[in-house]
Image (cartoon, rainbow, N blue to C red; front, side):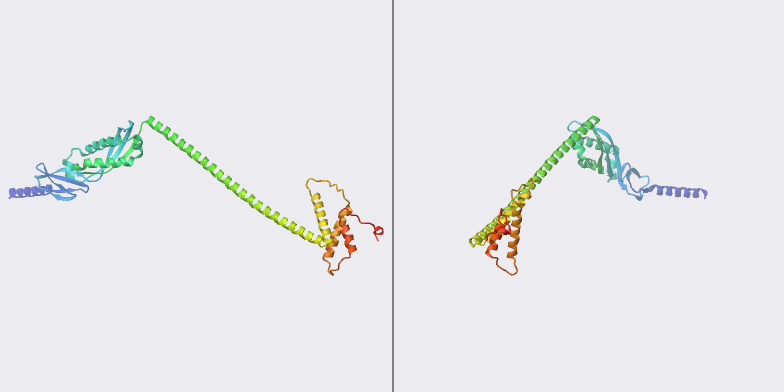
Amino acid sequence: MLGLDITVIVVVVIAILVLFSGIKTVPQGYAFTVERFGRYTRTLTPGLNIIVPFVDRIGRKINIMEQVLDIPTQEVITRDNASVSADAVSFYQVLNAAEAAYQVSNLEQALLNLTMTNIRSVMGSMDLDELLSNRDAINDRLLRVVDQAAAPWGIKITRVEIKDIAPPVDLVEAMGRQMKAEREKRADILEAEGSRNSQILRAEGAKQSAILEAEGRRDAAFRDAEARERLAEAEAKATTMMSVAISEGDVTAINYFVAQKYTEALGQIASAPNQKVILMPLEASSLIGSLGGIGAIAKEVFDVNGAQPSSGQAVRRSSATTPGYQAKPQGEQDT
C-alpha cells in the first residue's frame, strides 16, 4: 500500500506540472510566438493561453506597443556640397509579431540603419537652404520611404522627426552675415519706399493746397468783379439821376452831390496811412459851410410841413455849399 500511494502522488504531481506547463499568460502589450519542434505555429495574444506541453514552446516575446528609436547624429553632405550634422527620432509599432520575429534579425538595429541611410539619401538630395527651410517635407519623405522599406518586417513606422540640423560654425557665420545684409537691404528698400510715399503725399498736399488757393482767388476775383460791377451800376444810376436833376434844373440835388464828393475827398485825404500832417490850402469855413449846406438840404428834404424854399434862399444855400465860397456879412449882401 505504501508503494501505491507514492506512485499516485507522483502521478498527480506530474499531472499538475504538465498542466501548468501548458498554460501560458501573456501580458498586455506583448505577443508570444509558439514553436512546435522549432517551427512557428501561431501567436499568443494577451491573456490566458494553452499550449501542448513538451511539444510546443514559446519562441519570441515581441513588444507590440509603439516604441521610440533614437537616431544618433550623423554627417550629411547636401547637394550644394555643404556638410551638416543631423539627428532624428523614429516611432514604430509591431503589427505582425511573427514577421517581426522571423523576417529580420535584430529588429532595432535594422530599423536604425535603415533610417540613417534614408536620412542621408533624402537630405543629400536637397540644397542647404531648402534643407533648413523644409523640415516638414523632409519628415514626410523619410516617413514614406522608411515605412515602405519596413513593411515586410511587420513594422509600421508612425513618425520620423528630424530633431536638429547643425551646419558648420563658419557656414553659420556666413549665413548670419547674409541674413544681416538681406535685412539691411530690406530696411533700405522700406526706407526708400517710405521717403517716396512721403514725398508723393507732400506733393499731393501741395497740389491740393494750390488748387484750393486758386479756387479761392478765383471766387474772390468773381466776388470783387461782382462788387465793382454793382458799384459801377450804382455810380451809373447816381450819375443818371444827377443828369436828370440837372436837366430839370434842381439846384438842391446838384449842391448835395458836390458837397458829398467834397466831403468824401477830405475824408480820404485825412485817413491816408502815409500822411501825418495835412496841409489844406482851403478855408475852414468852406468845409463848415459845406456841412451846413448839407444839413440845410436834409432839413428841407425831410421837412414835415413840406414847405418849398424861396429862390433867394436856394441861391444862398447853393452858394454856401459851393467849395471856396465865403459868406458875406449881413450888411454887405446884395439888395
